[in-house]
Length: 239
Image (tube, rainbow, N blue to C red):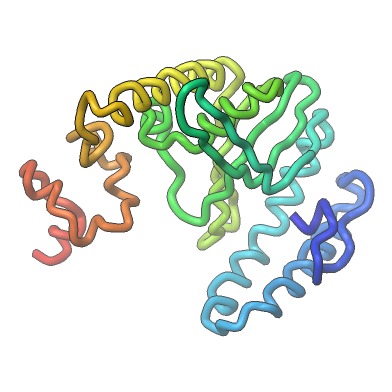
């Protein structure tokens, strides 16, 4: 974010457009900012692992920025806070990593950076990975037009490429509609006590390879898969 806006302790942000003609200067400036940030990381092991990945990603990031700017898309906001209050219920909050204004699309593109695996589209559609859907809904409730959603994987472990998972305007509209209905159902059914909270949203479908169990922090100790007679990668490795 320090490439676009002032951040305390970092070099000044980039000024103006990023183009093919100033690409190398933009990459150097991004790396200069990265050096300042990584210098504040006390753990040497963290720096040793993540600095090479950052270097590999720098050119990919600038290339994408050049392409976006050439097509009328600009980064607009960072670490954006959203909230939404039910008419007779709780208030929910979220924070988006980045929001771009895409003029040709006519609205915001809400983005989330991931250092690990990206959520599968079917898990997002099923409400098992609701982060961006919720953020889009909250932005919409504040009068913003949301033209798309994007997850970016920025680990850069091997090739330096930034894998993305995108949702166009029509998909985003569907996700917002379903997210709002899902929130209302949670309030009506769970908070008011008409049914119990499910241990795993989505039931056995969460055991699919691309399901939420794959990235769960408790996958190593949870017996959900065992109870359903499903062998996990961890079990196979032990065998």
